[in-house]
Image (cartoon, one colour):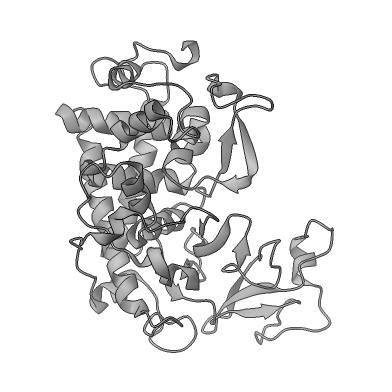
Length: 392
């Protein structure tokens, strides 16, 4: 799932006034190859949103952009030892996933660097395989909006209808709200051809609002069910994603755009689609809690092994994802946005993700970033194994 965090967007920023080159959208033949979908009725993307957006056109382009980023990322990961681009790749793998390299650009002995690298690359390979057919059978579904869903309190019978005498679904799953009461209604995903079904628990803040309702992190942009090849697996795009800045496309970055430009790319439709694809191909990858310094400590605390998870918010975005990679690399491997950020940073070299991170800390503009002054030379020493973060 990806959400629109409250307060992130207060202004369009200067990036929005520039024209950008965009990739083409995928064809209907590609949709048929990669996804199950409806051309009419609830869940169909072949219509307009309430705001008048052509959801098929937008979704097709976002899918194409996600795959274009994926393909470039796999190419770059294969060349992690080569030249300046390889050096940049190693730096991003370190910051986002804790992968350590020796002075020769090879794995740091005694670490799980090679295992993590292969895991990360494997996820991108599986996302890329969606282009040529399902990574698993049956093909995942691509849905727009939640009007295909049924909200029900009790279990369904073999006829697909709610059984008024059966137990509450929430009781069956033992899904309770903070007040101890069972959820009053659960979103039911049903495949009427096979009568297979799956329920998705709504948010605590809006118990009857479904997965697209408001959550603790803001309104959901999209969410993914499954990840293990079940008939109800698939991605649902929520109404919020068809509004405002989320309609933006990826393209050529504005030079020297800094953090604002990276954030702009992070919120683009293609990046959100990549985030959901990562969930789709690996059910173990969820949205991990953010990490913060231990109680009473400020962000100047450099003992990352002492940092703790905070369940109040999930880890979305450029800086929080890097925090997670530094403090809890084992969790970063299972956070979808770490993959999305790696993808856009590798595909769009002009974003200068490593240099921007350094500049933001040096200028003091982003105190929630890395809690110490870090230079490019220091980054290189970290990657080569000359500097141990725990002793900084």
